[in-house]
Length: 292
Image (cartoon, rainbow, N blue to C red; front, side, top):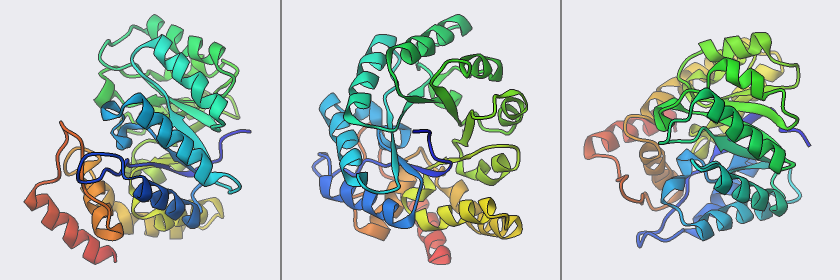
């Protein structure tokens, strides 16, 4: 099954005040996504604070995502990428066997591989796992940019069929759109570029904002895909301040603060991340009053 176009939510990982997984809140979060009609959910990505999760916690979140979406139209992509190729392969095989619709595989972080190393990394994952793969380019986090020419080369592999591009601009999307094969999908990795990237060929967004405003994010997609582009633009502009404020401090601190206010979740993060400052809380509360 190919990955659905539209809005995918990069799920936060709710924690209780004692630092343990809030399993009840996580299930409620997924149920809100299904109700809003998002195309899919992505557990264990950057927004899910994956570097702080144990292996057993990651496996729980992925299995719970699959269980909660069973029998619905909402797909699941599991974040399985690490900065070690063999561990990425092993975790990806496990997730595929669990029944995910796809894998989100990030550019290896910290070790900053060369072009040849990047190609070999993703090629090995592709050859080892019979599952849809979405590349994840986020150079602000990994220290390495997945150049469009590398993306286009990797797209020739049998199951690398999408990219989440969080490179911070439109240039890569434009270049990939111009040269890509027809069924290769581009997803914006930045909410603030959701609509601009749709206009140059993207198939959707992997969103932080849809954790807390899934219905509104899905409305932008539905308006755009139905041809009501002017209405989609107006909806996007109404939400544009939110997209900016969600990164007033390191993600996911701001979106967890909003989730706590909207859903009654704890705003707990795991060190080295901490809750947003009192000044940021005032800004976010003012924004929520305007939106709600």
